[in-house]
Length: 532
Image 1: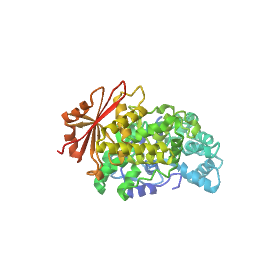
Image 2: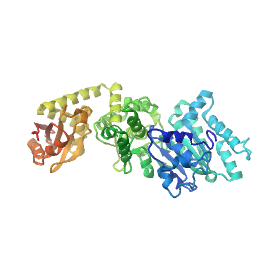
Image 3: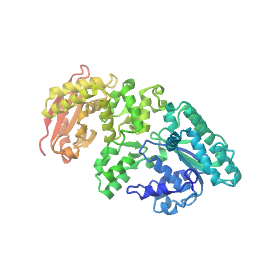
């Protein structure tokens, strides 16, 4: 049993013995379905803290003939599959973590690829004593020879596969040499002979031109297109509910802080953040010191194509159209062609979520919302501080019933954030309100749009967080144009919106807003709802 060749299951055993473990072994059924087929090359990319290494450890424990893992998988989902034993501990496995190898290579003062080749080859020579591997210089040449002489086929598992590509600027030429290394291992007809399954995982997808030519035989599963892998990337809502029930955690709080990634038909939570919060209590600064956030800070400070205005929209709870098709996997500043590329990069990093059906990006949860909001302040953008102060003043004016000031402020923000084309669009109006009341999200859930209430749907409703019940009122906001402002207030009352909201909160303030489409003059009326 080696570190790189036919490793054991010790790490996976520690993981499943941990206090918080969620069964994701159903993913093995997906990888089993492509073993020894033309689809046997799999790239599953996901952000940091989304269980990449856990999955690699699980697959290693399942496939490696260097251990007996039957007992470890008993009771888990995969053990109930009819084909559970078909590939259990049946393959020669080569598994390495490129991030770890990079750190080790630096500490030894040698080249990354030399370290990987020498480390793996050294173990292969000890493992396959019947095969003369003394003259082989590469892992893939050694695998081909073992396959040719012994008929063995390999499962290759690479964690952090994209590390040299994400950081190619630190060592000139490394990325290109690494791509050649991947091409030798995976490209062509010979790898089809000696590889039964290749599973690589990292943050970025395979899309960069030279990487694509080296690895275009891989099936990709990403944060934008997870397909069948969706429920195995992060925790699903049902899994989080079960964890909260088991450990007595506050489900509503966990959902607010860590939910929000939309993968296929699944609402997905950040798994490491949930596990940490359930076990030790809330910890909302775990993204801050990561290398990926350093990249995000760089782009925010540059304000690429005015992207900070879009970030304000998203922090306020609205969505922004993003074209993800132009992103080419380069991560240096000069490679980004548009803010769409920056936002796509942030989606892969986990700082934004993406609705592939609508082509819209959005901030997934409170953890990320606060992180990005704080970074806008830290970036030296004084305008953001001013904006937050103005939002605080707007909220105070709303509470005090100062309808003239509210109308004036909403009019100003509507002019700034809505394009001429979409000025009268309902989504634009709703986004205007969300941005105007941005600072209030410390007191409220994200605004509910078209919330079922009474005899219809309230345009926008702000409900206080549980910790602020009694301190701030709920807000029910109705939007109209080219109508008298009283029409908006009358609709709120006639359709009995306050009655439905009352079950969630205490005091309620009703806000009707309208404007003239020609003059763009806004008017507002504010009333406190009667106690119910």
